[in-house]
Amino acid sequence: MKYKKQNDKNQDNKSIQDIKITKSLVDKIYSTNTGSEIFYKRNYCDELIYTEGVMDFQKKLNTYWVIDLIISYLPTVIKTSIKEDDGFFVVEIRVDKKNSGVFEIFREGFKNGKYDEHICVVRQRLNKVDLIPYNYKFYLIMTNLKPVQYTLLLPSEY
Image (cartoon, rainbow, N blue to C red; front, side, top):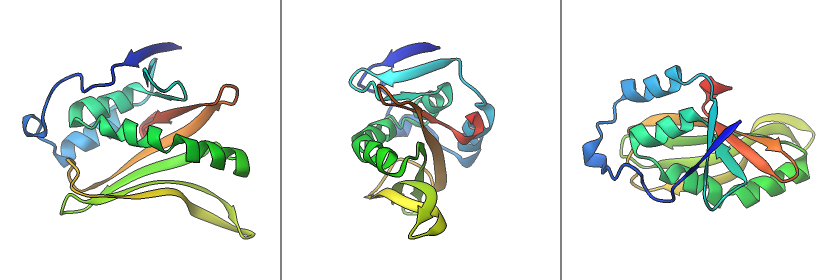
């Protein structure tokens, strides 16, 4: 496996005005990334690596903040993984027509003896994001226990 460290700052120095985000562009990112030979990680976080598809998502949509947001909630995800013996999570960013939305990390499993497809681990309201209305989805999978490491990927890369 090859790893590349990503700088902590926006590499392309593009503003949202420089990028025309359309539904077809987002759909293309999700449909054309089907695997990864190179994995990336931030200099300050060894616990999270991510795929070429996630890097493509960041670059084309200028959304480097998404990785930072996920990293900020990794301690909660790690605690949940250990407590629930579960290493598979879904990350969603749902953006509405007012460019506000919700960031959520959830898992499926048993809750109070009943199976539940949507057990919320983290939920944060997002005010004015630079994305078009869409339901953005990623998978966050524990890929190493000692030391703990998760891989973030697009559903098409699973």
